[in-house]
Image 1 (cartoon, one colour):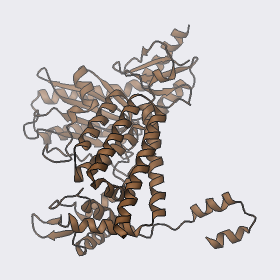
Image 2 (cartoon, helix red, strand yellow; image 1 turned 90 degrees about the vertical axis):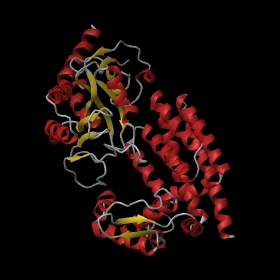
Image 3 (cartoon, helix red, strand yellow; image 1 turned 45 degrees about the vertical axis):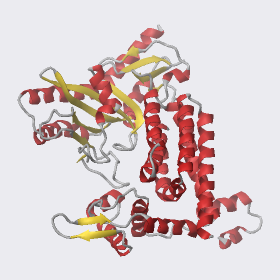
Image 4 (tube, chains in turn green, orange; image 1 turned 120 degrees about the vertical axis):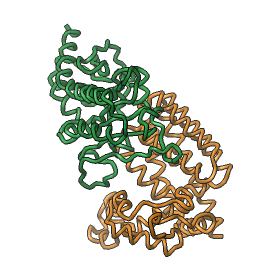
Length: 238
Length: 256
């Protein structure tokens, strides 16, 4: 009975959140096609990626930033490369002013002191190491969004090897609007969490996003949310 | 403030006057150009911006600080007059850091000496409470991965000296603030870092203080890893109190 109610919650959440995941998977598929057709220079990749992600960043959805990050050495003319765009709603670097769609400035010279080896970061290691969709967070991304964020990443393959990741930064506050309608009408107390067991939202509004679910003392079984690449699950919250 | 107290007369509660004293405390006298100048001068004096390093353009600085280009230009002009930067024309031109090292440190010590002990303790208190609050929450939220990354940062800082040690101190505080999962706490930590950090780091010139600080950072990482919010909070409060004491000692030497 309760398990059925949870499965139903998972289904409805899947309908609400699935499109966000499907969109990133669609970018991956299109980018893999473009790469298979011979796009190999940074400028060409940038153009393709901007064309793919710009519509998602122009909308009122939870996506704060999106793009493609190349595996080191994949692009012949840019050994390290981020093709990442941020939305007008993304507050980073704006100091309280109004924003517009813009490209994230990044340092790609490994000799520069501010250079950051992105292959050591969780959003890279999770997607590349696991070979599938990976959800990092919720965390405060003070370099890129300035707010509580989930980063969804998926590996991009060409000729059988991983050549980078596509991804999106999702606002937890923005996702709240998508999940509230579902969790607000849930028949049983429930929690939505990441595969790593971090809370994203719960029927009890007092539960904070980012909290490790095990800290809350709930021992219920996790049910995957359909359409989200195994990165999200629902459990009983009591 | 005396005028405000009189308006409510002698019967006004102490709490009320305390609140109003805080609300109507004078704003920092520095204008926006001065604030930008101070921020860049601090960074140069601390070696965070190094000799020969090229500064962003006026337009870029204005964008980053959220001020008008003309304000950024004014700030660069002040730095030029102070001899901290020089401007070269032409294709490889721009503004380059030139003042650094001992002369610059003298300027920072001068600022320390000109700040009262009361003010230093008060700013240190706020800095400590914000950092301790962040540490307390970090112990509730941090993943093992994040604790590992923090430990690496601490070890990097423990063996560093000079500007690298100060950069590590800055980075550790910011990372702990981010682990609190509060965007506002992060931005408050950044604000305090820019205001108080440069002074606090004057205490980190002494090798013994750098080692003592690293030891406290290690205990902090352990407390966060053990998910002990009370432990993490206590360690940071003690650490910042200890650093402020060291800073007061540096100040006494400077005014003597």
